[in-house]
Length: 123
Length: 349
Image 1 (cartoon, each protein chain N blue to C red):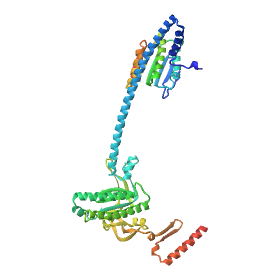
Image 2: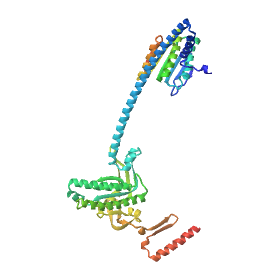
Image 3: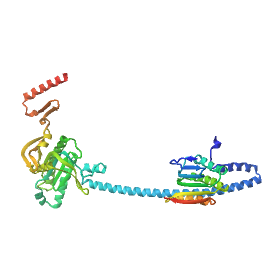
Image 4: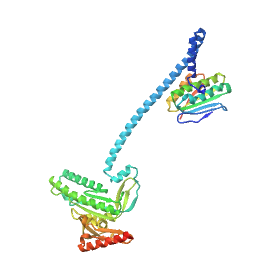
């Protein structure tokens, strides 16, 4: 799955070989359910369709509250994949001077403690 | 296909719908199981809500901070703009308005470049200034001088002159750069300006006398038209927008030879304004570096309408230059009827 970035929505790439989910950019879509629905459904289907290590990389510049609600659904889907016995590695990237994105990453890490979750800063 | 549309709150909505049915049924076991699922979902929702509220607060804080910074920056910019405006107004007094305007519009080139251009150059100074100055209290001298320069500057600017510089009691200005209306119009504007200056001087002299200045300033004016080098002279560190050349010196020499209260113009200037002013020919002057005698004319005043020559010229061989007042009445009549006949023939062709 590939969704190109717009000035309101992030770029999203979900590949099976290697098994990897990458999300990057800004997120304040007009209709959050419509935008994230397909992503959430695809992630929920991983558990029945594939096996093996899943790498997740997220690098948001801005994310609104409705998108955070969608991110919970995404992380729940990822956690379900882990619970099925698969290895999962999540890297949350925040820009060096962006405390808000960094703290949000820490919040997700705290809520999904079973995931192998790291928060990184980049310049 | 409304069923296919994804809803972020689908699980919560499903629970609510399910709960409604279970409550109506009132089965204890089902209620117990539902309460557990409800509790689990509610716990997650509370956690999500906590996170969302915290995130929302952080965003709000950032916005408040950004807004505060923006206000401070706006205030700082406003102060800077105000400082620059003040500075610009101060600078404007030291620069010719055309140059000042072009500089602040970003259209002025501050390279050391000059060009050769036909300009009309004006020089004026106050007769016996040193002696007059010595007879006045410094405060009075300053007051009268400021009065004099302010009035002359206003007249110069209203005619579109480029004020080059004030040299002690002298004024040097020119027409033809950076803006020009053409060589003829520039020369005419300069002579018109000089006439207005001398007329204004008469008013000022009366006023100064009433104020106790018994020997008020009288000025001499010299005007010449010719090719000069105009532009930025100096170095990269310090530039001066000015004019140089032999023709500039001619204007200065004319001023020195001028009658007090008068205007002395060169032949080159006279040829551009001969239909505009009455003149009296004066002795020619010679100048080092200028290999010709310069014919000079004292301006006596503006020509009246009836004194103005009748002129018509066209490259196809037409050249009429008549001074009606110098013609006898019967000659005037004869020429008029001949011209009418020619005009008629021309129309009938």
